[in-house]
Each structure stands twice: as structure tokens, then as C-alpha cells.
Amino acid sequence: MSTIRLTASQAMVRYLAAQMTEDGDRFIDGVWAIFGHGNVAGLGEALEQAGNALPTWRGQNEQTMAHTAIAYAKAKKRTRAMAVTSSIGPGATNMVTAAALAHVNRLPVLLIPGDVFANRAPDPVLQQVEDFEDGTVSANDCFRPVSRYFDRISRPEHLLTALPRAFRVMTDPANCGPVTLAFCQDTQTEAFDYPESFFEPNVWRIRRPEPDSRDIAEVADLLRAAKTPVIVCGGGVIYSQAEETLAGFATRHGIPVIETQAGKSALAQSHPMNFGAAGVDGAECANNLAESADLVIGVGTRFQDFTTGSWALFKNPGRKLVSINVQGHDALKHGAVGVAGDAKASLQKLSAALGDHKAEAFDPQARLDWLARVDAHCSARTDVHEDYLPLDAEVIGAVQRTATDKTVAMCAAGTMPGALKLLWQAPRGGYHMEYGYSCMGYEIAGAMGVKLACPERDVVCFVGDGSYMMANSELATAVMRRVPFTVVLTDNRGYGCINRLQMGTGGARFNNLYADCNVEAQPEIDFVAHAASMGAHAVKARDIADLEAQILAARERPVPTVILIDTDPMHGPGEGGGGAWWDVAVPEVSERAEVERARKDYEAARRHQRAAD
Image 1 (cartoon, rainbow, N blue to C red):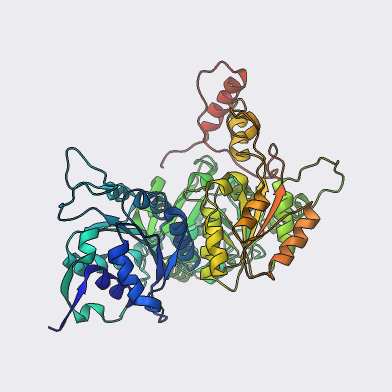
Image 2 (tube, rainbow, N blue to C red):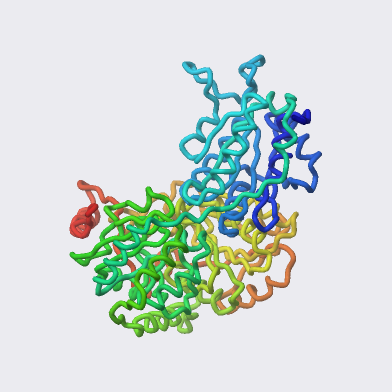
């Protein structure tokens, strides 16, 4: 057997560079790195030597550069990924939040935090977290519950088994998620005689698991018996690249489609079978279908509480639940008739089993009426006073009117996710929402990841002032790398979304808007100057008309554009019709009469919740 002597770091980098997709690209497109004493001498040396064979990019924060990598994988429909490396200690634990985000959203990312010395000679090393009762523990053990696969590389030859396992997880449609390889810093520099065959180019094929024919037959029987079926479209439709299959299935068999956050834009909003968002942030026409449905067919969805109205949305007493999902855990939730299989393959087989069967007619006019109300609701107000602050719906309307079929609206937390799901009329593929973890601070880093994955798209990042303040530094990275996108920064002077939730559950205004915080002076943050200081083009829109003009101008720039606009903190986007109950527990006992009233409403709503059938 022919061997080559390499350090463990050199071997890891060479292996990563040789792992390919079926299209001939590297599966790991590159490595985001912030170096410290835990990875600079080992991985740093190996990455420098690799050059363009495995490019390295410098971020500003370990968490946000991991967010960029995750957004890239999401935009690539999980067909490619990125790696992220940090030093030990705070550099590593900064990535734990990103790992949780990827875990919840079932997205591939390779995290390579430096670790303590395997030989323990300098124990404890700088930044080492010591467990008084377990000498094998380090800070990187925090990654265990938020990784699909975790391994600690404490010997160079561990890579021979750990790396193939890592790629198996990242390319497995059912178990896809973050991989953490905690890399002991002395091990990174140790040499080993690796088999040369280990570094030969290898193609990873993303499997398409076939459903069991008996499950398909059972669901086909349920569909034939159903009078008012509805399809809930989840992110699995997009990852399976089953968008056209779903459109054909829904049209052929007469079953309307409603959307989750992850599934939105699998069908364009203009598609006649797309009745829009479902659930808490759902359209009236979609929620009416959900409430009356006698058969709910989830395709690639994990049935998050926002989609199901905390399991109070599906009100038909005779309703049955079907879940088509590549992951068996999701397929069997809440007593569903489960079909464990790829979304595209399952819909194709189910359509063949149904033949020419078509469900009873639904009302197509309800969808058109809803869309007309959305247009009216998102239009710019004309009868406004001098101090008027626009609603978020008007901001969305301004972006919508400037949008093309290449526009992608993206967001993660605050008011905008619900508003966009409800009101944004996406072209196919024109929506990117991180709402599994709804992580504040994902937005700007995520926008860079989307643009890197899809340079041909016009990426518009919606972010509130709260999320912007949490994490904005990758704006500087986007400027340095000349990655252009548009940031629409809505300033409502605090956490407006949670302030309204606080009031909606009977609470007093407290610690959310700056005006209600215990501070010596109200902050006057110059967001335009701040963004400009990082090299972005930054401007404040005077009004909605000016916002539209600034969005159009932003498309011509080679760097990110940040457009600030002040918005109303108290009224949010306005619902425009739609919405459903969401289970946010209200105190049973309170001195506030508002809380007691909210508790009564809460108890009444809970009676509609349904446990597993």
C-alpha cells in the first residue's frame, strides 16, 4: 500500500478538497476561519498551503461566519456545504448557537473547533474549560447535543474513520445536519503515514429513499375517501428538488397547497394551487382550508407550532394526518400515517397510485381575493400626517413592487418573518427564511451566504434594529469580498415584535422598546454612519417612495447597500386578514387585570388543541 506522510491538518485539508458532488464541484466549497492558538499552527498552515484547492475566508465572528456557511448550504438545497474552523474556548463556543441553528433546520455544515492537547502535557492550556470530575471533557462537548455527528480527533489516524462518517451525515437526506470534529491542537500538527488512496477524488451522491409501497397504498386510499384534502408544503420539497413534482401533483389531483416558512416559494405565489402561508402567520384562505380539511398531507415538513397554530388549526373533527418525510422521526409525529421517503419519489408514486383521481372542487376565488387584499394592505399610505411612521407591510410592499423573478427575500427573527410569510409574494425560489431556530443575528451573515451560493439572484435582507445590533460585523466581510446585497433595516427603536407579544399576553410594556428600558438616556444610534463605517453604501429612506428608489439603485453597486427606514413599533405589519392562535403560556395568577383576561382567552383557545390521534 502506497502512503504519504502528512500532518493530520494537512490530511484533513487534502481529504476535504477531494470530496466532490455529482456535478463535479467540491462538496465543501471552502473554509471560514478565525485563527487562534488552537488552530493557527496546525490547520492554518495546512489551509495556507492548499491555496485555491480549498480556499479560506476570514470572518469577523465565529457564530456569524458559521451562519454564512449554513445559509450557503440552505440556498444550495443541501447539495454543497462549507467548513468553519475556530480556536478553542470562546472561539469554539461562539459556534454552538450556529450548530443549533443548523441542527434544527437539518442543514449541513462542518465545524472544526480547535481542542485541548491530547497529550495533556501543558494541561490546562490557555482557554481550557476544566471538568473537576471528568478529564476527557472540554468546552467542545457543548456541541454534542447540537451536532448530528460529533467526534474528537485526538490521534492523526482518527481521520480515516471520522471524515467519511462526517460526509455520510452531511449528504444523508434523513440525518443531514451539522458535523463537529473537535481537533486537538497537538494532534493537528502530528504526522502519520496515510494511504494515498484516502485522498483520491470521491463523489458523494445524495440518496433519494423510496417510500414503502404499502404506505403509499394506504395514503392513496385516504385521499380517495377525502372530501377536503390539503397539502402542507415544507422545506423537504425544496431540498428534494420536488417543486415541479408538487405543482404537477396538486394540479392533477385537485389538492390545494399551503406553505410553511421553510416550504414557501417551492411554488411561486402566482401558481393557482398555492393558497399561501399556513398557521399563526397564515393567510385567511390558507387557514380556512386547514380548518376544514378532513385530510392534512404534510410533505417535507416537521409541523412546527407556527404551521399548526400550536395544533389548534386543524379543526375538522374527522381530520386525518399524513406525513411524507425522509426522516422517520418527522413522518410519525402526532399520530400521522407516515410515509418515510423522499418527497419527489413519494409524490410520484402516490400520483401513480391515484391515477386520474381528483379531489372535490375547492374555491379558487378565495386565493385571488386574498392576494388582492395583500396588494391593498401593502400599498403605501397616502392619507398620513407629518409624523406618520410606516408599517412593516408598507416596507414589504415597496420591496415587492421593485422585485423581479430573481429577487430573494430573506430574514430570520423579529416581526418580519411572520409578515413576510404572510405578505411576500415570492417567485419560485424567492424566499429564504431561517425560522427553525429564528436566530437573531443570522440575517446579514445569511444574506452573504445566499448571495455566494446564488450570485445571479437579487438578495434583499430584511432586518430589524434589534437583530442588526446583535450581529452586523459580516457586513465588513461582504464589503471586503465584494458580495453585493441589499439590507432593508427597519428601525422601531427596540424589540417591537416581542413588545407586542408582551402586551398581547396582558403584560406591561417592559424592557423591549428602548423607551421602556431602565436606561439613563435613550440611545440615538446612527445606523447609516455605522454601516458606512464598514464600507457599505448606507442611506436613510425618507419615505416609502424613497425606499423603492433606493432599492432599485442598490442593484447597480458592487458592495452591500444598507437602507434604513423608521417604522411603527406598536402596530407591526397589520394582519390584512388571516392569522391563527399561537400557544404562548399566560400566567395563571397576576396582579394585572389584563393578564387575567388574557389567561381566560388562553384557556379558551387551548380547548381547540388536539393531542396525537
